[in-house]
Length: 217
Image (cartoon, rainbow, N blue to C red; front, side):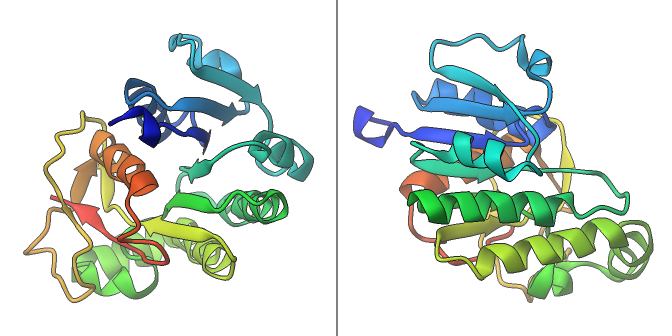
């Protein structure tokens, strides 16, 4: 990547598994990174001249707006596990509002395979038991998060990975497969490293602007 591709980017959910991968890989690529997180101590192990840590709550619109100001792109990997919550929806709404108010256009947001029209990608057990029962609150939050993003005026991409596992980025994965693709044609998991790799590539690629690409093996 040349210097013309280097950007000032802001990462929400930076202390999570995928968020940390985003920060690490972005720094390796020469980007100037701001990591937004509740507790900056969680990222004290990552030291870099191009890294700034901002302490704040994504549910605080003022803190979010201050962090968005002056950025060139924003990446969201907000997570909350399977519990009943609206943090993805509400936090993303704060980010979207701040971006629209400040003129920052490029947003890459991590959702999940199985949300929206990609529900047909899931096998029966996952669709009706895992998602339908155990993860129903998380997926409801993701559904509403996606609606917030899609209704925005931003240049957005919603990235939909299946089950996430710790692992490096290999750079070898499928993406943008049709919603008619079955689990027999894709793996039911992907490494956080490869999701981060794909999300960062969207910063310089308009292929999936206003689209919801799945990413898996």
